[in-house]
Length: 230
Image (tube, rainbow, N blue to C red; front, side):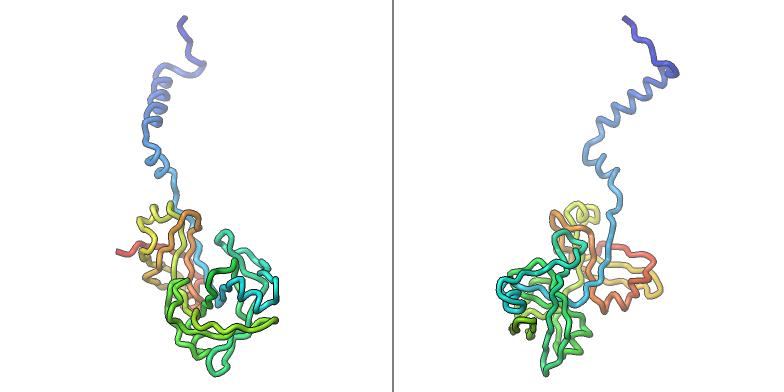
């Protein structure tokens, strides 16, 4: 039995449709995915002064059995600003009365400040990647239930960019590489040497501190762009 063509379609049109289907089926999946992929959404966040605490230090500062109380979710899944704050006391009794605690808790307590914070406290802040606190200055943290003295852990966090492995592939970088952040606006600025922190789940987000954000007038920026360094 000879099939008849659907109404409105001639043989030439049918052959063209069949060719398109066959060509599409032969396109390698990786190429098809690359063609469909768009530039990932970039978020640039100003990371204000804050601290990370261990479970033990949470209890010493806020009371036996206490845990952190999430107040606001951060951009990265699973991370949050807690309701709890501490007072930070530096050399010569200079202090910051309200430093936000971020959760979840960590294996080592750490304080992240901007350079201007360090100047006001009398602390010579080293620039370090988060978590690398060996041989860094310490401070005293005071909470409603007690105080702790950190022998080390006060840093200016190195500017960095979080991304997942798919984002890293898009930019042609890997974990530990360096990138530049180009900010256009009234105070156009290029921040070089952002540390790439790539893992399986992170969203694409740059972290700079308040000094850097203010210098670039980030709130009024017209565009932001990540550029691979060569």
